[in-house]
Image (cartoon, rainbow, N blue to C red; front, side, top):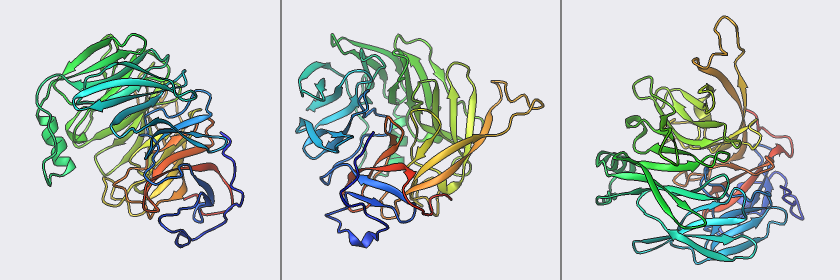
Length: 411
């Protein structure tokens, strides 16, 4: 990714220099020394959720949402183009792993239809109808299937007036609404359902490498669910990834490594007290946990394309970690603990551990965490994309992994 510099590089700047309706296009964070660029020209724009692929296989374009619809950012010129206009009722946006297509669902009343649009020509075709009430959508490694979850029967459990998110999620979980997973054949539009359950199925993700492997969760308050699961698209291979070992242990916001070999997730042992960025190697069943300090806990994590770095989007004091100084975009450099023959740490049955060296990249002290920033590495690993309302409206931003000037980035 070659994000061209602005004509005039901004040095150390004060936040007060920028009006809320006219944020800078580029600046150096005075607290970290890292360059930040604004990717979207208009307020009300945002990058995609952290586990939705937003990038073309060639790494030249990234999909964001703008007030006009689904748009692309040219990662060399920063030019923004609207690809799917008038996308107010669009969901499930994801870019193909091999094709230059963006997939999405348009909803009209109770009718939900999946479409594919070429990111260069804007040519669009209808794929087929999809069921709703669950997680929409994800695309597999060879661009042959879309997948998600849906409600098979029963009335939707919607939030009540004045009801907190936590209370609603518990009520939704306890409703035991019949659900299932589905795949939609991209070529034929054929719908297939499997994995029926009365648990709340959500967060469905295809492996970026294995076309038939799905990662999904049992949604709800994390301390009340066995959350992280994998399954094959033929319904076989159902497996719980993180069996709980203690009261109040929670795990979630799971995602695949770029090569599809690992599943990574937020693990707390127990909730709100001890924090880990935990990994599960699919082929061996090996577990690797990296410890984080309280202020380093993040709502979402992600991993660089090469797998050597992680990123986090920080948190506010009123969130689960109650971090006193957690409003940062973080870069994490993982380091495994030394292995010894005495403890047989090479055994897959034992959890291997390590720590992360955290570096602060972006000061988010002005960000309201009602909007979760999310983080995504660009395909070349040189930038981390996130969304933020630190200037008032929401925009899509990117921060350079390499430090531009001396600062106080390392904790």
